[in-house]
Length: 244
Ligand SMILES: O=C(CO)COP(=O)(O)O
Image 1 (cartoon, helix red, strand yellow):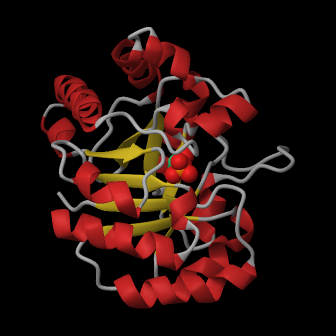
Image 2 (spheres, rainbow, N blue to C red):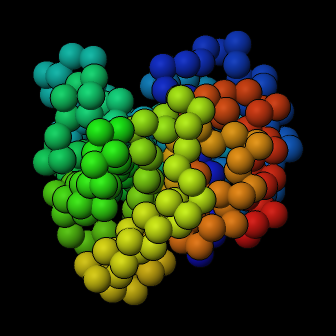
């Protein structure tokens, strides 16, 4: 399985950031891991000129229609991107997306030929109450469509309380959650579940990436803030390469 490091730029980035992305592409163009930048919709087309693999951050479940402000999976493909994120907790919170909608968006991404990075994660209260694994299993039951394969789907575990906070679960906690996610995927998808990539996300930075990437069943990371500048993202990519 080829490992995957994806940067999620969220609502950040203008064309002034493209030269820095060129720098990243030059440094890691022949990386031994998959490197993806999930940029803002406004930049997707221009980001593809860097030669990096590009992804969207969300897609509508429909292919086209009267949905002001939304973009569809075929539009993301049309821009030259090959990945899309679904189910990010910021979408779930800001736009009240539920698991059923995440499932529909994931299916739409597949239908358009996109590789979907489907995000799951527990809140701080759920973590404190020891509900993490039950929450994650329920999210996967309700948001991963049947028929997921390693070619079409990556699962990203992002504890909501670890996003942008500088907090992370302990290495033992990450390893335990990822082992449980792997067991779920294998029980539901068989060999495909063994090969499906599992990313960790939430306050990944150069200083903690190496330790996280050594953990079993961690096949890469989904990185927010530390993916915005080549100087920050590059050492994280290198850390994943060294663990591969
Ligand atoms: O939400 C994230 C990636 O999708 C994680 O964000 P941070 O890396 O900024 O914590």
